[in-house]
Image 1 (cartoon, rainbow, N blue to C red):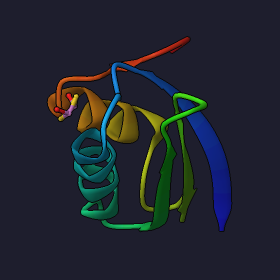
Image 2 (image 1 turned 30 degrees about the vertical axis):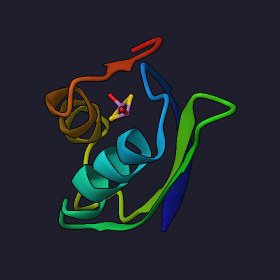
Image 3 (image 1 turned 180 degrees about the vertical axis):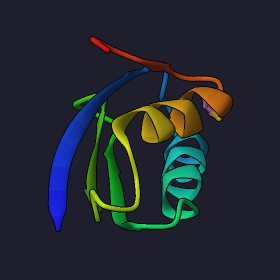
Length: 70
Ligand code: 9UX
């Protein structure tokens, strides 16, 4: 199991938080996604044999947010 913190710009409210968490959680291989609104990031636990960095970035950006530093 891998884990990483992805910096995300544009998340400001509780609905943003649930949108990003839901999008990541729906990916096969993601076991946990926890957005920290104060820190503008999301901590993800995932199986790196099933999910790639770019698929996680895409899932976040499909919700309308920007992944920083990718
Ligand atoms: Mo809240 Mo997030 O009204 O894009 S849903 S700011």
